[in-house]
Image (cartoon, rainbow, N blue to C red; front, side):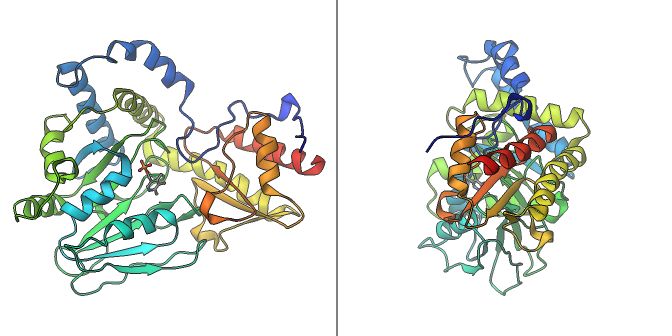
Length: 370
Ligand SMILES: *Cc1c(COP(=O)(O)O)cnc(C)c1O
C-alpha cells in the first residue's frame, strides 16, 4: 500500500514515539560521544565507573526524594530479571499480583515458583485496572505503576495488610515521568530505557528498610538462590557502587545524564507536568475526533506516559502506523499481543510536547488521505 507523504511543516522534530527502547535525547548521545567516551572501554572495578554508579544512585535517590534508610540497588538483566530475583529473594511465602496487562502478568508468572505458595492473582480486562486487597498470609503486593501494554496507570499506594507485608511497584515505564510518593512503596523498580531515556539491560530499585530487612532475612534462610538473581548480592554490590558482573556503561552514562536533566528542570513535578501536557493533547484530540477514541474508558486510569488510541473500523490503524513510519515517525504500533485497531504513543518526559502536537497533525493528515 502506498504511504502518505507528510509535509515537512507538520513533521515532529524527532519521530521516536516508542514505549521502549524509547527516545534518547540528542544532547545526551552527544555527551556520551564527548566526555562519556573516556569511560567506555574502561574497567568497571576502577574509580571512574564506580563513581558513575555512585552518581546514578545518588541522583535517583534525589529524584525520588528517598527518605532516610531507603537505598538504590541495581543489577543486570532489566526488569524481567528483577521478577525472577523477587521470586527468589523478596517474596517470602506468597504474593498478590494485580494483572491488568502483559507486564503485570509476567511478574505473576514468575511468582508461580515451586518454593512459594501459588500467588493470589487478580486479573481484570485490558484497559481497566483493579486495586490490592489485604489478604492474610500475603507478604508482597505487586502491580505496575504504569501498564505499558494497555496505557493504564495505577496509583502507588501502600497496602496496609499483615505486619511486614511489602508494596512492590513495577515502575519500568513510569519512573521519571509520573510523580508519586515513595513512602507508599517498599520497592520501586524499573529499567531505564523508557521515561529515563537511557538504554536497556539493567534494573534499578529504590528499596525501603523493610524491603532490605526482607532481602537479608530470605538470603540468610538457606533458600537456594542463584547468585545472578540474588538481591542480597545486588544490595551488597550496590553499596560498593558495583554490580556482580559487567554492567552496560552506556546505559549508566545515559541514565545519569537523563536524571540530571530532569532534576535541573525541577524534578519529578516538572516531569509529571510535561508528560501530562503531552498525553492530554492526545486524549483531548481523540475525544474530539470522529474516528478515534481513548482505549482506556475511565479518564482517571488513563496513563500520562503511554497513550492508547482506538480507531473506528473505517480506519486501519496498522496502515496509519506504517505510513507514519515511512515518514520517520516510528513505533506508534500497539502492543503486539493486545490485538486492537489502535495506535500507542509514548509521551515520556524526553518527548517534546510540541512534537506530540505535530504527531496529531500528522495522524489527521494521514487518515484524511490514506
Ligand atoms: C518494558 C517493561 C518491562 C520489561 O523491561 P525489560 O527491561 O525489557 O525487562 C517490565 N515492566 C514494564 C511495566 C515495562 O514497561
